[in-house]
Length: 398
Ligand code: GLY
Image (cartoon, rainbow, N blue to C red; front, side, top):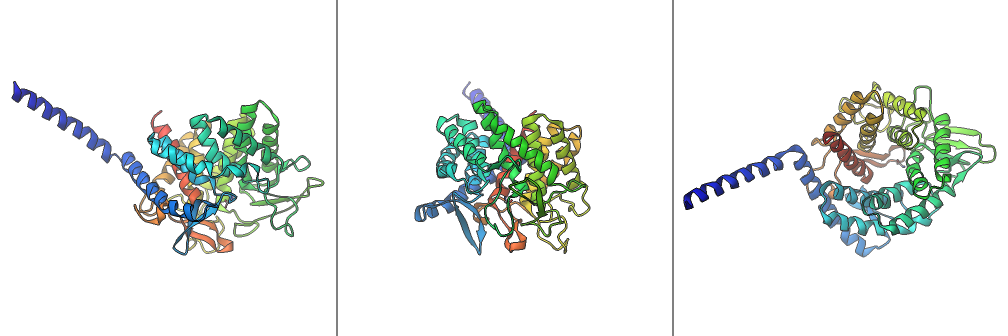
């Protein structure tokens, strides 16, 4: 009898062991374990910096071998907290939730910062995700104030939210394609308050951008400058791209993501068509590399000897996963998104554990014309990589 029990116990043990082992070696589980360790490593790197210089709240990149931390006013400040919320979503481990809450709280003062358009990046990626998960009413208040502050930059004559205040010698009322990303906060605020003003402003901005930011082939200009008195376009140029006539890869990625999201929020088919055309420009481009991780600008002069921009690839992958849900070209977009994701999780782009100061990805480019952040890790590349991972898993679990 005792022998029989022993054999049953042994078999049960072997069975459980085999299941666990299978789970542990699945590529998905291996990647999650890698991400967990790498982000824990990042937290260990950041903690001492928070204690020493308390106006620095989040990591952005590596500069001359050192971690570059930024204050809450930096446009990238919300991505790290956002990544921690994403890790909580992926793992359901309360460790990540506690860390996410800590890094989210450090950004609160930005709700009153009316000096830039970057409110969505800063607050929706952090507080927005936090609110979706926790329903914490304080997060809601912070987000509503942030939306209020953002719309103070709207000019009804132009029909857009002003992007930058800097370089006033160059531009009168600059609107950059990146600004599409900030509209998600406004769509959220409209639903939350039943005040349609936020949505009207977001739709106006998206329509004007559709009208004025694109060339005939659906490539985007980076900056469109408006006359704030008449609303007329004064010029079309670039800031982070190669030239006024070139297509900056991350700009094209913001456009793809932005119009896909605006279609989700409005159901207006003109936005879906725009997103499809933007996607088709990217995917059919003769200078898009085989692994679908673009060079920093589609028209950079020394391609193929130009730096890549993994951040643009992560934004494209995440957007394509969403666009595949709405478009009849579903299979094409899904396959492209999967291909980008596979490239990014290969050894070429995914940092080895315990390296890269805890950043997940290598080979992003911030601003090549300014010789700034070229071929480095960038926090927003990691953020959209994790978002792609979550969106990809949603497909796998359907
Ligand atoms: N929003 C700034 C950038 O994409 O670099």
